[in-house]
Length: 436
Image (cartoon, rainbow, N blue to C red):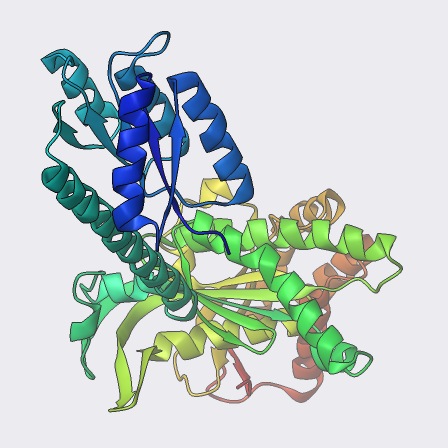
């Protein structure tokens, strides 16, 4: 490895040689000392140093030289060597030239000719020491930056911000720190992932999951959300601002999934689908764990509800479902939405309407379900009024238009059962689902 180099530039050859000898006597053990008789020659030498990877901690230059002056030279050099320190060594520089270099070229010091040798040596010693101190500080700063970037990849920084933490006080995070806030929770899961994973090696499984997740993360961040955790192939994301953010994110995730499937099809791979459930409610965010291991987490019945809404997407063959509490808070005109059921999921006594957001599906599916939306609403109303025979006829008509509408199939089977067997005395038209 070549030694670092100190470059001296002056058009007065005798002074230049004298300067080099003084530098070499003191610094030759650690540095090479090179000279240039003009600014132009100095630039050529420095270009070679840069190409060869030779470090240049210090440049000493005269001011008054033929062609390019010292201040112009040092300012030009600063563009390619911004950390290199510069000393102007001259008896004829004016205040403007010195000020120019100070402001634009990191001038370390101005020394008048004729120079005092002891003063010059001391100045150069301090300059190179300063250069390496700053270089070491920059390396440590870069390491801290890289470590912080890694930290941000493992810890949702948005979560910490909600707990009123930032970069200045991360070391003050304590177990038990918490807040309560209304948010929208999004759960997303790949359909039939277990069956799919059995056909792949462990590495193929991870490559597949990471490829899929790479389409989801940007959509979540773009819409003011953040990923709370990955659960295998599933995602749990939080949206602190408004429910529309969660829905917009889900729609973009579905659109991105379509793009991903196009790429999979081109490679002869099977198409994948996902289900997304969204619920809005109060949640508690906080820090749990023990002395050696902290974790940011969410504790709330609202999280369980969001997970169960996502589970319902399999039953209704729907891409995106939202709960009643989310539906009540959004601008309905922004989306294509239809009511699909009244349910009480496991652990809940009170029923909730479940709505399907059609955006993100193909135009064919959207048109089919919008065309039968009014019929479905009428059929559900008749069903709740125990007019099962009339409801069955409407459900049958819908299935003739769209034979793959799973929600209608479910209602038809329920109505047929209750028409034959009757309903319990406390029946309210709410389906109790045993979903975890």
